[in-house]
Image 1 (tube, helix red, strand yellow):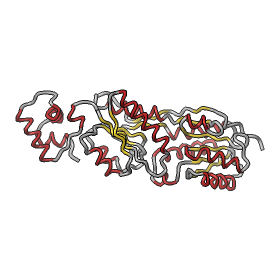
Image 2 (cartoon, one colour):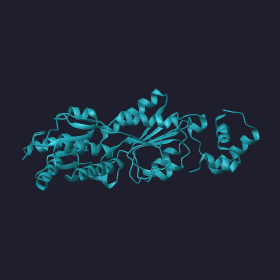
Image 3 (tube, helix red, strand yellow):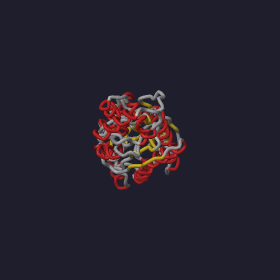
Image 4 (cartoon, one colour):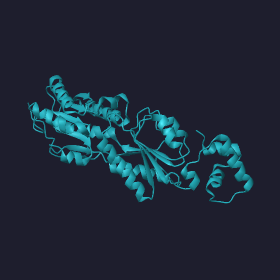
Length: 334
């Protein structure tokens, strides 16, 4: 993909001169303007809206692939916050939901309409990252890949969130705990947030000397019942649960109820989820808040700060906040 720096090098001018030739923000000689436009045609450069306007992003692309295993209601919380925050700054948002990987990102970035990008559903080794690093416009990831050098990222600290849930259960005396995680396809893609939850859960369980297990779960009542039966069969002393699967929360509560367990009398349940979901569950859930609105709003603000020349932190991880509700209690001595 041809960048503005390539045009500048070809024309023998600075990148800012190319920008001025496109936007008309400052006067330049006719000879220089002609040389810049000759280079643009020769290289096939397609200027984006920010280069034409010579300013901050006016149209933001939110790249939110609705892949298998993505919980759409929570994804839409992020999308709504991106849109409302962008509008507060006078910006418009183009939402892209097709799962096209690097090809889709190239298609979106190649249009003159889009001059800033926010990417979601980030994988640990995301194939979109090499292209993202080569773009000549600002971009922010909602998520933290394994190699985030040269990228701007914002997210909940999911590893610390899982550790906080395990710490809470350990403080209540629970010695056998399990993580019910995202649907299997999320782990197959090595989605960053899901991987970091597993890492944090396992690290905290090991630190406390707990017996632990990790299981993905399809978001259906049948799958929740099968998993509940398996957990009790393989870990009959199980008394603590961490759930990071919004769609499976109520099915799991129902499943353990069918199997004769009371929450929190027999089983203490914690979750990583939006607060509204925790509060409205069949049993109000002790949870680490997934602050979708704050994360998405931060992403927009970081995106707008970069072209303005303001310092932008490479990585912003929001610390976990645990709210204790009615789903956890001290373990009853056997």
